[in-house]
Length: 149
Ligand code: FES
Image (tube, rainbow, N blue to C red; front, side, top):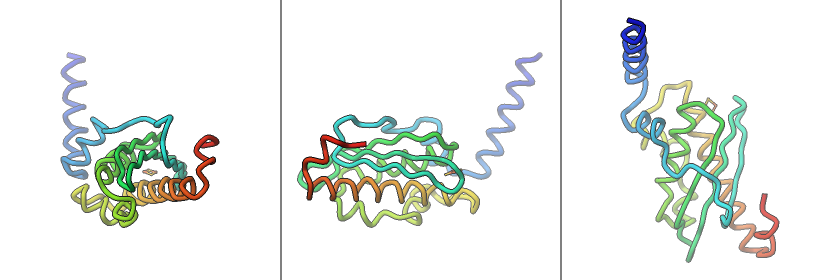
């Protein structure tokens, strides 16, 4: 009996979530890709948004192409989804191409986001830019790699 009520409640919550979010967002939220911080990253960024959530992004770059991108966050489901999505969007792209990824591109990849969740995409985009800034900085001053974070 208790289990039935629990299952019904869960199904109801899932229905509400499906009304607000695309299958892409729910998929990345439930099964985030590339979660973790790389110890040997070539670039690292950490940004806390006005809502208090933080995203960290690490990139591994070879021949100016992003080989690997990972993230960590203490944020909500949408933040997890946006950060997970951005790691997939940048992998295989050049640093210049990755620089062009912004809030709108992430929202488009998401298949749309409710207005009050759009800032999660902005936070992911800003964190990626910070990781790429760090990559550029380390390239110009190679010794900084050894004093990362
Ligand atoms: Fe803060 Fe998503 S709720 S970034």
